[in-house]
Length: 161
Image: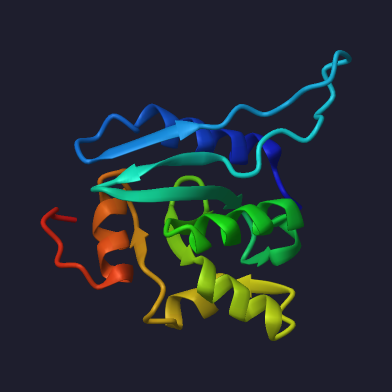
């Protein structure tokens, strides 16, 4: 089962560490109704720029060994696709675990392929076997994102990971 607290914690960690040279990530506020119930909010969690590359980022956190792809809404997918069509980089940051963190950077093209093939979820072991999925295991810092994005786009890395 999904833990909203761990997802909010992950988003907060990203927002608090967004003052790294070369990266600007802005948390998109979530909407609430007058009764304080969740009302839908933004299309993705963060918009920003990493080393000159415009980013749209949806951050997901998972405590189990499998991440259900249905947790990425159709509204989020439409936004990520439009962002990509306009020349931006659309990503899902998928974090497994809380103490023993494994973070995977999933490009929109890979996510679209999984959805088109009928996949319902992706497991931690499956992700680890995919050489095309950038990852960071153990202690993770936001400046690793530049290195991971460069690896995805084929640009040489100037940031040590």
